[in-house]
Image 1 (cartoon, rainbow, N blue to C red):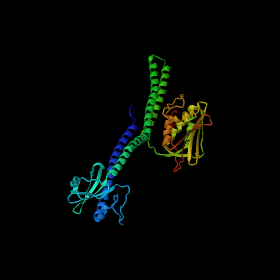
Image 2 (image 1 turned 90 degrees about the vertical axis):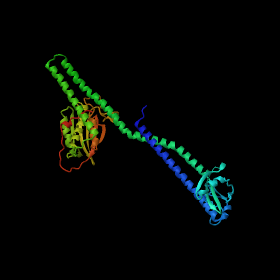
Image 3 (image 1 turned 45 degrees about the horizontal axis):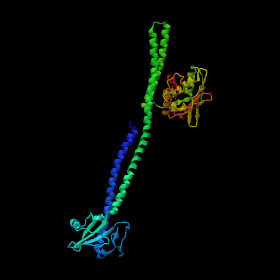
Image 4 (image 1 turned 120 degrees about the vertical axis):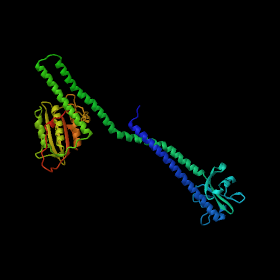
Length: 432
């Protein structure tokens, strides 16, 4: 099974984070180890300084994490009661090692001989069964004074840190993977939806284009199959002409949508009077069949939009209403101004729009009913216009018994007197 693009992106992001996490862990461990080493070296140096300045401090109790007796002379400057104890040894000129701290482990003489040239520098060395020790030497009374501290506590801290990093790592990476996957799926959802719509559009367009082409070919084949009367040839040519007209309208609508999707053309906004537009639509579509009426205010109702787009939108709505109302039906166009918004409403007495069909009403090639001559691109074009001009749809049921489709825009204040341009061809819409 092929992995989805979102899963691939999540996997790559997780791999990158894993690399960053490993580098971060290494850097953190180095910083912690360096800090612990510096802290131990400071303790050893402090203990040696106190012992050299005050020989009596050699016999004082072991200091845990501190530098020695306090300034007041009290034994056991216990600055860090949880720290590892600091032990003291002295080495005379003959190489005899004397432990001055209770419980101090035995120091191998070879170890001191090896590190004697490094006087003043701390080093780490194993001391048999007691484990690793951090040691520091300094010259004292013709010999050496040695301070040492067990590394067992630091090793325990190191193990805890490493275990926490090992345990937290997988959970962090899993959280990163699923988080990236969710974000990727959400980010790619519009792209995937667009891809599916494009595939559906291509399939539907192929079907819609195939139908008139098949009819044209069939009519031509029948007309040419045998000698016929002139009237029969005329009938065949009229049917071919009708299918050609439908095919041309379909191609023009598809090209318009394709251009609009790729980059909507930027026509200049102008004042458009919805009242004048509604009256023009009513006058033009009265010849279609149903009784078309327009109810508009007395004054101008202006919006700011490209006039040719609003012409086409109105034509689509009125053409749909006339088609579904039927020859004996009623269609009503209303223009209203309410507050800072104005609306264009088209109602009909047809069968209406079922609730189940409304979510897909503006899908391309979708028809609310199978009975209709349109290709189902009209409302898709209308929806593109509404969204591009800042309009809002309202779909409902009309008191006439059919559908109610309304679009509202912000009211435009008249800056200059202008008459909207009404184009007759733009008023010829396509069915839903």
